[in-house]
Length: 414
Image (cartoon, rainbow, N blue to C red):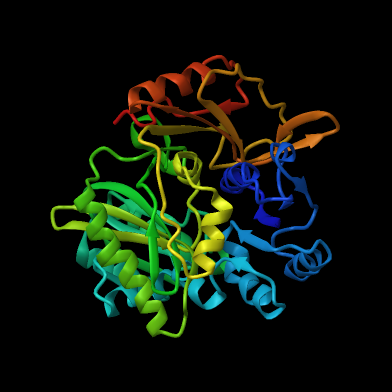
């Protein structure tokens, strides 16, 4: 098969690494890809939002299967276009991807189908939003309605933070049109975890749970980011928790989307929190999580191409997972998630057994690999337990002494 992966981040590099292992793959392409992917795939210089050019390339290169990584092209209807052109694609349509594309749609959807989540209200008027916050008090959560690259959520611990957040989103337009509507919801106390699943219409095949670390700095301090590290599986998430979440969250979502005439094919991601009343949904994503994918896919025993084709053919892929722990820590550009420099030389790292590197924001300038994003790469490791995986990852990272980059030192250790 000729296979195309659309995207340029760490999640897409992870997917490409797994696809490259398959004997079923004749030719693997990534569009546009990044500096670390050229060992596994041919990088095609087409932006992930250039849907017309991607369709043309898929036809010219006789692509048999396309996997779409990022949320933006999904919400622009890339899967719809590929399907209309008779091209096989593992990705949700624009209509199904709205579950991530609009938080207000997602909250109303969860309410309608009795999917456990936080209480909420939606606002476009800043004064009404502020009045609601003053009525409810802090802590409280403010979310930009649209796509904001994982940064459109403010967990306000004080009234001042909450009022500033709605002012930033609705008046100052910090997130442009993504923040022209806000969802304000109750703060849920508990430990978060992510549960992704391969989904095709009514069929849901869960992966192992992962836990992402969103805050920029150690001890969960600093601003929210797209994710500074992750590990899987999660010791405090039991088989019962997973079964409950599959039945009451992922399956209800898949069935609800079918009922709405928005059948879902692709990766459904439940961002969940363990409350006293059981798991509740913080958010849905309609694609592989980042950086969760970088620690979940390395545990998959199956041939990933076979998984995708089985699911599209209506067959159970019979997923199998390694009984070990996988942990990954992100190396970020100094200043991220605020302003940061690009074009700084990527450090070299020692090769240590059972460790690996996933590239996210990297590119080549001539023969030199340099940074091209906020989250630059992820160092991951597999081991018998969290502590051993942590030790291996930090053995690699601590070899670096470079002020252009930083990383959290406590991933998986809370």
